[in-house]
Image 1: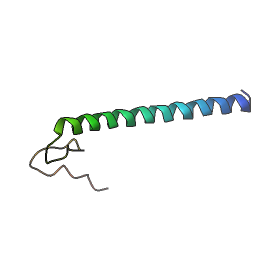
Image 2: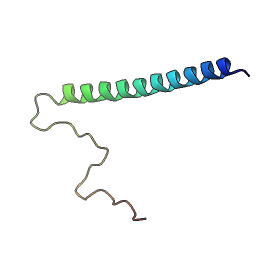
Image 3: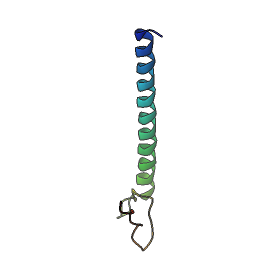
Length: 63
């Protein structure tokens, strides 16, 4: 494989990764927008975490 072909493959991979990240961000933004719409006009904003309950979230183990 020559250098030009290798560069093209690399560029396509990088562009695909960026598109995937953009898609994930857009999906997160859409979920947040929907949660905001569903909670309006509430006094509390929607939670941005997956943790709910009356206890603190589990602590990360020390290394």
